[in-house]
Image (tube, rainbow, N blue to C red; front, side):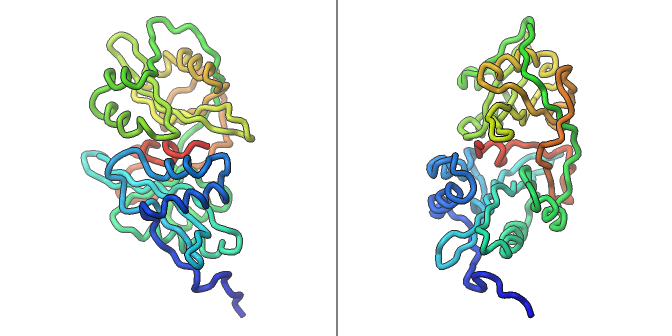
Length: 290
């Protein structure tokens, strides 16, 4: 005899609309990460770029009470000369009595047509669940790099937002403007002569310690590598003793780096997009500070 599903048919799935953001933020504050207050969660759920998508993910409701959420971020990107709309499957949380509805919740998100799906923060059983739902891992190597400043002649590190905006052009400028107010995105530009390198990073915790910077975007890997001593000094002064750097972001092996195997996998579900064209902008990684 099959066991009854807790909540049964009374548990319904609905898209997270603008008017639902407040109660979803309250739920995520209580059930997922209380370090972020309700206001911060609400700001994180709504992305900083325009034209963000049809909803903010999907939620489980029981008697109109939120008992589960899968947040999502949408962005239209130019990939290999074509326009693609991405859906980043983000924060997932379901109350224990209703965990049997988790797959229904995720599938509601994945049933939306015309989207390329990514998941950059799966953990635990979600990794295998993603695989069963058609996601594949993005191949990469990861280094943990000590942020030890070294002299870097002729290189400036620019962090003032208006000066960054003046330095960047084209796609880099658009990325900056789209993420300028994203809660988890930190920005800097390396300047050496006529060359610039736009860098986006986030602060991360390991074993509860907020001492790490994860590099999310690098526009000039060569300049980034040769000027990493300046980057390291900047990050160390801001409390990041080490950086997490993936080969997908900048395929450089810093001399002070060592292989790092504790990073969460990054996954994609798409038959139309090559994994080399998937980056970490316009996602949970730029929006949700942990």
